[in-house]
Length: 602
Image (cartoon, rainbow, N blue to C red):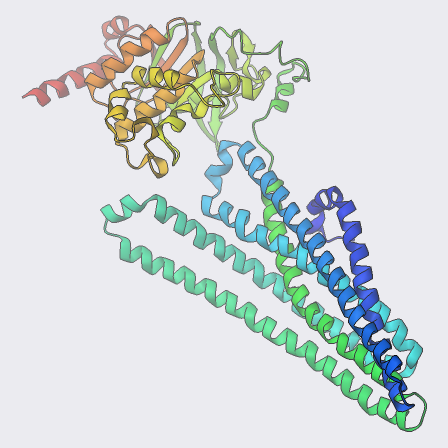
């Protein structure tokens, strides 16, 4: 019966059950052959006492060589099969873990640190692999050889066998005692390793901020403190392991002394032959490594179970937003074969919010939102910080889920659309621009799929250049020495804020989306560049739905409609001229920005 923390491994073990069967057979042959070695030694000793011929000597020598050779072959096969399977399961588990992390909702990454996740996907996964490989192999070898040796030892002398295994009850108590404490200490070590990984990741990602605030030494001291705590906890485990192995060896040594003392008397009394006594002691010596390995296996097993529990914490998390949630709308969930019916290939892009109320972590963010955005029109959203602008647009691609029926696309609840189809037809440029540590070309082409324009598995360069032109980044890119093959560094560190935003806009435009959402995506560009981008967008997004959030009146004034959000409510809605005439919040914003522009010109 597997411990509860290891039960998630059962499907992986079943997947390789045929290989495990072959591995088990290799273990049986390996130990079955090695068990014969003391028998040959004992018979050779007895033969020497009674006189041995050259033929018998040659026979025993060849038998020993044959046993050693056969053992070597099956030992190699055992390691090849069992350790190979552990690597295969590690490969599968790493892929499944990554795929699961890709499916988890955005909120999961808001609650958990990247460094902690990375530690579980690397250090903990390695500990699980050690459990599945060396721990299983050495445990199987120990069990099989001990069982086989025990039968031969009982045949030689039941009394000596009882004395030889007398320390086992004490050993089992010691193993349980140390095993429990090893598990507890390793869990604390892994938790500390996660903290160190998270601290390191945050420091590397925020290197520019740390340098700007001259906090290098403070961060070094803090990291050193965390590292010292990690070393302190690790040394505690090392001391525990340093006590376990000598304890097991002491018990084995005591058993050997007892056997030598009592067995020697048996030989002197003529109750057993010298050859059998040598055979018995050879078994005792052969059992030395399995007993020592047992302590090592306990260490690996406890580490592996602790690490698997940490990995399973991630695997047991379920995405908060998934296609299955469509059943909550009162409409049957999407079934296989229905994707054509719910496909966004004919999506018009009409968006409607109906009596929308939304709360995040118990805090109400949006209240009584009723808004219809006709297909092919443009809507600008303005409002003070914290008014709910970003939250509102996040509900369209289901980054967060609104109440069933509160968000509609083309008159249908957004939950009825398959997530991949829905998001494939939405171009979303968030506030925080993220670029991958890759070339500009690959960053712009990141959003395309097999259903988009592809050339040998990649977006065509012509399409990429057209998107870059529309985002007014093409001239900048062509000025780089390597052009579109320029590597931008981690998070696009080699580009300016405006260049990163324009690259992200080009990435969204390349998908030719039915709905384009720009969440303050022009904040880092000057007004001249902004005008050029908006003019391109009007041409490209003609007949498509465009929503953009901005704090600049110059950005939103030409939108078909402008919605003003304040404290989670739409307080004003209309065209630029209509809102100016109302002399409300939008008018105040407009006058303030006019004053700022006049002061800037002075």
